[in-house]
Image (cartoon, rainbow over all chains, first blue to last red):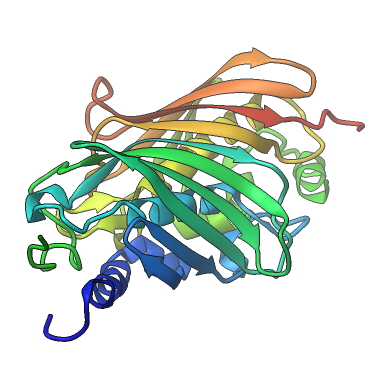
Length: 161
Length: 147
C-alpha cells in the first residue's frame, strides 16, 4: 500500500475482498461505493436468480445473500488488529416489503451503526435502481476476530493507528 | 400460478424435486430433496461457488440463509396445496458454526399454519445432526388454492 490515504487503501482492499468471495462473484455482486463502515453494492438482474418462474421475480434467498454480503463488508476494519478483521455473521433478520421488480438491478446499502470490542451491528436495505421503492431491510450482528484466517483483502491492510 | 398448477396436473403436486428443478435459483444453488414418507430433507451438495470465505474455507452466510429459506418454503408447499409459491414476509437466521465445504442438510417444522400466514422453523447441519450450523425462523404469506 504505497499510494493514497486511508480511504484509498480501504477501497482497494474491499475490491480485492469482494473479488475473493466466490459466491458474491457467482451472484454478480458489484461494489458501487465504499468507506469504512458503509458500503453500497449492485446486483444485476439475472435469469438464474429467479425464484418464481411464473413472474420472473428473484428469490428471497438472493436478497438474503446480498444483504449478508454487503452487511459484512460494512463492518469497519480500520484500526482493527489483523486478527480481529475476520468476521462471522451471528444473526441476520430480514423483512421483505415487496417483491423485486423483474429485469431491474438491486441496490443494497449497508451501514454499521455500532461496534463494540467484539461485535458489530449493521443495518442494510435493498432498493431497486429504477426508484426508491424499498424491497427489503435487514439488521445483522457480526462477531469480530471470529477466526484466525482473515479473508483476502483484509489480511494485508497493514496496521492503522 | 401456472407452475404449481402444472405440477398438480402432471400428478406431481407433492413432487418437490420436480418443483425445485423448475426454479432457476434452486438449480443455481444445486438444491436437492430427499423424501422418506412425509419427511423431507433438503440437501445442498458442496460446490465451489457457494463459498464465502476462501481462507477457512466456509460457505457464504447467504448461501446458508437461502438454503434455509428454501427448506421452509418447500416444507410449506409439501404440506399444503397452494396457488402460488409462499412469499417470505420475514426471516431471522442464527449462524451457529461456520459451514464447511461439505454437503449441508436442512429440515423445517411448521410451528403455526394459519390460512394466510405460516410460521416456520428450519435448521441446517452437515455431518452431525446434533451439531447445527444454522437455524432460522420466519413468516410466509400463503395463497390457498382457489384464491
